[in-house]
Length: 286
Image (cartoon, rainbow, N blue to C red):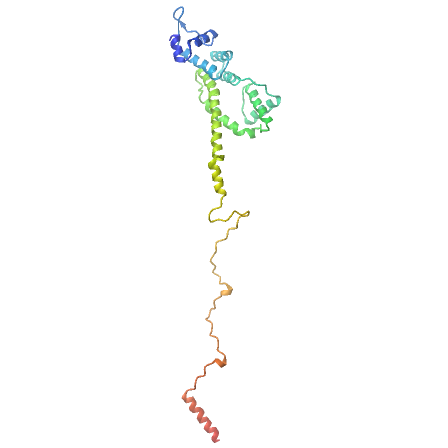
């Protein structure tokens, strides 16, 4: 393809492509005349990587050249290439060096997490700077206190590394690291903020406050809340024992006898009256 077609497909102006050619970031095309050259898909892929390093990672031209030199040098192992790219992207924003105490904290934290980095990795220094700030604010900086963030970071890193197959082209691997570190890092930061707002709304929003107020209000059949909860009354059990005050007699009660004066006097039968009269006559005769 001609340079005009390369510009159209890459989305870059022709002047920008010519600048990259002069700086040695983009290899020259195959000449087809004194003023024209032919470009291939490899040039298009190269421009894609340069654009990611320049526009997304915001790297200066000299740092872009360092990354591209590692990509072109097949003697550089893939692990070192990924490290060069990540270091370039992570170090794109300058800051003060970490303190000795911060470096000791970072080293101890990595040891407690059982994370091994390459020798003299600059990421130890960048981690130490963050730990310096946290410690200055009185926040925990040990593995136990930082475990939730470390576990989340490890899980995200595992997913990101899965996007870099071992057999991937070197330029594609560098592009994935650059984009993943910057764009997905920003995505992760924004998703974290969105999640914080969603959880805050669920916990402290109007509906949550209404639910708390409703829970504090007494129910219609309940009296005002007492400082000490009322004891629950045990269920009334049926008893098979007879209450002593209500004991039923085994035999029916006998009717009370009437007083002597109140007794009814019945007349004796006629035979008894006759016998009494005869006895009286005998006594008078004797």
